Figure 1 (cartoon, rainbow, N blue to C red):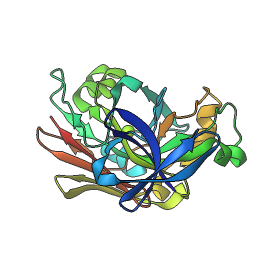
Figure 2: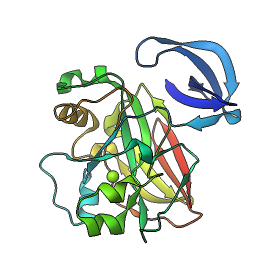
Figure 3: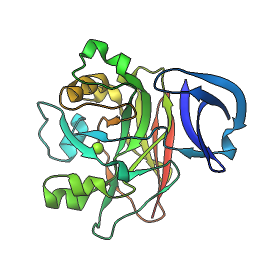
Figure 4: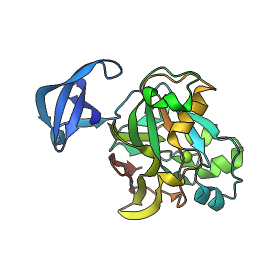
Length: 250
Ligand code: MG
């Protein structure tokens, strides 16, 4: 099932997406909810990020191909960093290149959406804590990442965390095709089977460090092919079974 969050006039609501139609959800998507018969046309709605996050926990250097292009050593444990909720933008909104940076890159990534408060969760139990999966773009000021050494500034500018458009709740995350397009041309292409630490392993690993709240997301890392975006560019992240996250660059 595909769950999205939408705005119509001033009203925000969750809905189940079926083709070009959206059926309103009644109840709490983290506990009990049901799909109603109230149907709207997707094209008439503003698509919001499918969830409101308290934090995005991100994983660096989690594809061998990307570690090679960056001359990074393969980490022995998942390499974690955090993007703030203030970096979030909706699908179709503009990524703004900050004045402090001369190189702002896309990073297409599979994102895990947490469905239940998770602390010290064993790998065998993680499915109970996952609501589903979506697409994310870990936008990065590459020059500042290299200059600063640690990554907080480079990863945290406003607009640097587009994700969506929908959460797919019935999906095996371990072998999905992932593509990033810049102005329609494929620039990143891999499969999640190439992840060094798999999506579910990451949920367990991270939960042994910090409490994950419902709606938090985990950005699982990007494959090779990273590159800069310029003004007016359109960047799209497409993941099999989920859909396409599209944003324009300013
Ligand atoms: Mg990344």
